Image 1 (cartoon, rainbow, N blue to C red):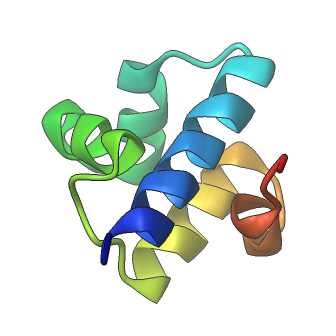
Image 2 (cartoon, rainbow, N blue to C red):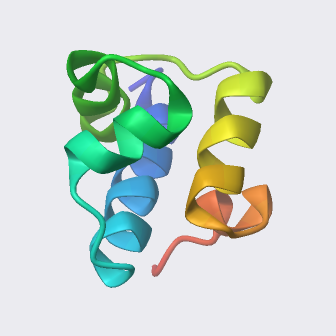
Length: 72
């Protein structure tokens, strides 16, 4: 599956957001994204650019590398 990485990264973004008790709407607003775009990113239906990864990491106050630390 060629988009497995983007799905896994999206899930990690969602996990971290939930751990920090931030709604998807609030995270989207902090990133200056539409909520629908944040939803697609978390679902792995959007291929995030490095600048998108950096923006989301800053909004969540975590290093971008956290999005690549998978639990398996």
